[in-house]
Image 1 (cartoon, rainbow, N blue to C red):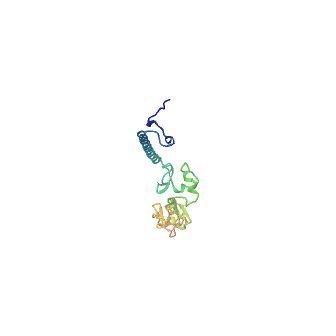
Image 2: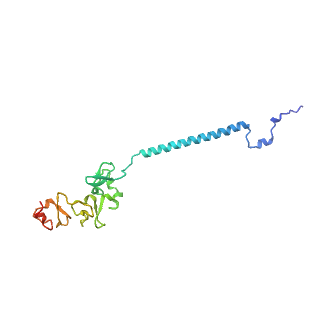
Image 3: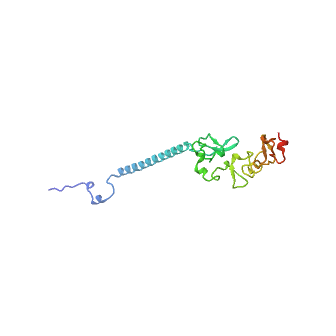
Length: 205
């Protein structure tokens, strides 16, 4: 019986089975390695592009959303600085804020955060602190001719920057402490002394 012989390149070494190296030819291994690196690079590039697009969309949506509440509540109503409601149209007088009435309609002028610690919880432009710092009034009561503070500090030209008496008032030192620097013209020549010098009865017209 003849012994068959095999070419040397067909012979297998037992060590070949124990090796962790691939049995693929070198040119095929290089191709696989190149393909793997290319796939990783492409995947990372796609992920990076998607992240940039997602960030751009998030920024656009955030900037496009309208503010739920006005950035500032300050507004002007007549000659007074008032409180702006969420509708950005209604401007309340200071004295309408925290008066137990929902003047804004949706109640933002009566919220707990705004009214729980008066006057410190109110914006500064809504209040006026009198000569006695423990006493305060709403700012639309300042310079209205009435002694709301009790010490006339809210009617003072120097302390409250009030103008001189208007055309509907008579300048004098009133007898009644209700007034500070002048009295209403309607009290002139009414048969009652309203000024310490009686000018309301003899001069005022």
